[in-house]
Amino acid sequence: MIRQLQQGDDCSGTMIAVGRGVDIMGSTPGARGNRKASLLSRMVRRIILWFYHWKGWKLEGHLPDLPKFVIAGAPHTSNWDFVFFVGATAEEGVQPNFMGKNSLFKWPLTKFMLDMGGIPVDRSRSANYVGQIAAEFAARDELALVIAAEGTRSSKGEWRSGFYHIAMAAGVPIVPAWVCNDRMVLGFGPPIMPTGDYAADLAKIAAYMRSKLPEYERFKILEAQAQRLTGETPDQ
Image 1 (tube, rainbow, N blue to C red):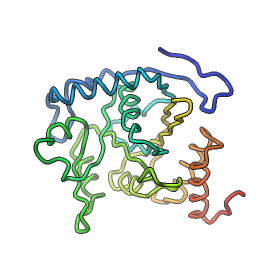
Image 2 (cartoon, rainbow, N blue to C red):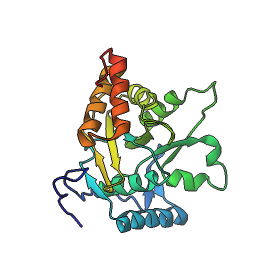
Image 3 (tube, helix red, strand yellow):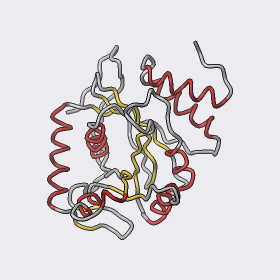
Image 4 (cartoon, rainbow, N blue to C red):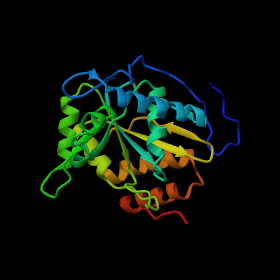
């Protein structure tokens, strides 16, 4: 169902349900081409999408019509965030990918984790995980990588820079994504191509996030973080 959000809602905008004709249920894109997804992963994905629609989540904004990008999502406050992002990207006809410790991809979960969009990463000190993901971007024709920019649910609102380093190394844009749990709205912003000036680019992202949820405390903290990095005096 498509409906216009009422004026005065904490999260305002237009709900959209647009597909790109991508088969997100029957095949799994990867560096070696598309392969048929396992029965288990198809069943789990259908359950996730059913739950997403049953809860009545609404979508604001489009993902860019680009083959590769990093989705930097915030806030990260619940394990249900994964469900909502799977549902929202499915509305756009995109199967999202995520990073996971390589130990999670061992048998018997290997095929299931890959089918769900997982990308195994070696996070040991000697490994360059940014380089690993950049190589994955280079090897694939399409890749939409979802990253919880705050890092953990315990974050007060400041973002870690991993999402930015990955986008820079891969040469792909960053799509800011926000969640309003009170109104059950998830939104995608315009793509931002990283320039190499992390402080300036983070300030652009923070300004967009504040424009969507002006009174949300974690986005105020994000904006203050960007202002500190750029040398500006945070607003009191």
